Image 1 (tube, rainbow, N blue to C red):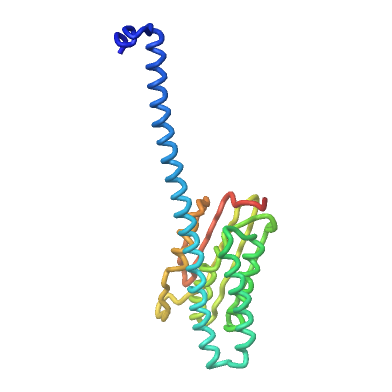
Image 2: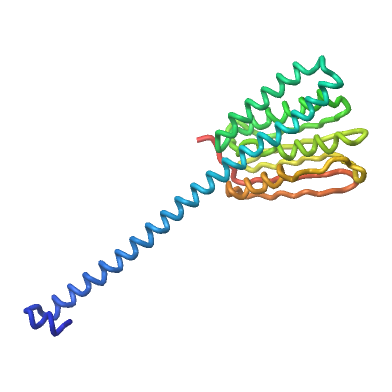
Length: 239
């Protein structure tokens, strides 16, 4: 190449400049191609995550509705006069679920209100159910993915309902974007007629992963008591 360029009238320095321009241009072209490929793959990953989140959130609605319909059917046979009020309460909760699943995050205040309504819904059905609730911290400016506590509370109410003296204890604390949620309930160690589908807990685990939240989730059984503890760090705040 040097001989050729020299032959057509270009000096050695001009030859090196042209060769440098060609090599640099080739490198930049392939670098641009690699970057664009990575950007395209990232866009696909984001779309896949959004699609999965939408599916996971929508999965909670029929799961909750199925349990609610089964309960209403039982009450229609035993206490039909209470059914209208129960249907109105259920309507309020379903309305929140529909609106919440359209969002990526909701205020913790809203989630707490929903949990309280849900528990009250089942206390109305089971007067034997004893409930202890404790909420501490400043919840006004902290966001959380919607319906995070629903599968945990749902399981607690369902399995404690089989016992002679059902109880659940809810403890939620928020401090400096760190959330600590503990839920306890009793259950039948043997002879239970219930079989959990596992949909709710698996849904929650997967949503924690997809949202990329730094968290710790633990479940423990001891002396006919089931305890779930969920810690989440660095929750987003209201912009």
